[in-house]
Image 1 (spheres, rainbow, N blue to C red):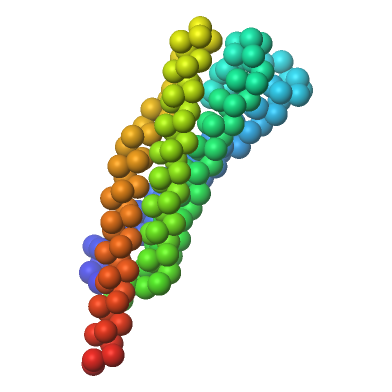
Image 2 (image 1 turned 180 degrees about the vertical axis):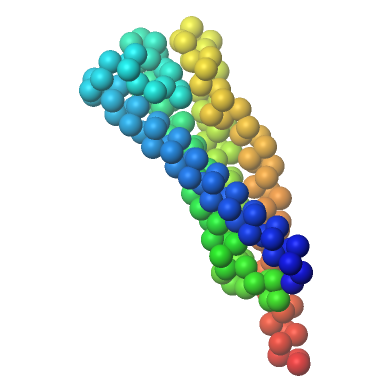
Amino acid sequence: MSPKTDLVIKFLHVISWIIFIGLCIQTGTLIFNYAFIQFHIFEVKYLYLILDLSELFTQNEIYFGMLFSLAIGITALKAYTFFLITQIFEHLKLDKPFSIEISNLISKISYYIFSVGILGTIAHRFNQQLAKRGYPVENAWEYWNDYSAFLMMAAVVFVIAQIFKKGMELQSENELTV
């Protein structure tokens, strides 16, 4: 492996960790904000609201809980997906790139990305229905506005996972014939 390739892989590994940590912070913030709003621990004006649905909370607590839960679920799944990506970089060996660990991780990533897309679709439709009914949910779209990209990405990553499985078979056949 060339030094340039090694440097790029290390850089991508660090970037993946940074994104994972950022998504964990975002998920934790959403969870704490939900709990603090739901159980009236602090007044809403004192909270760091990255998702401000306080007006929806005063109008309908059930819809508030459902929408907030979808946002928490989506960000948690994104965070776990990036954790799996960091695991790929830890198991990656470019002299024998096709390993069972990498193949399993890529398959898991495709399933989690698909889950983000499905939850995003559900949240998007639910958000549209609430907006049609006049509920103040216009600032919530940013958590699932990329759902279609995640569905497409899941398909691409699934194909890559299948290619990796075939690569593993070919690599093991080559080892047997040598």
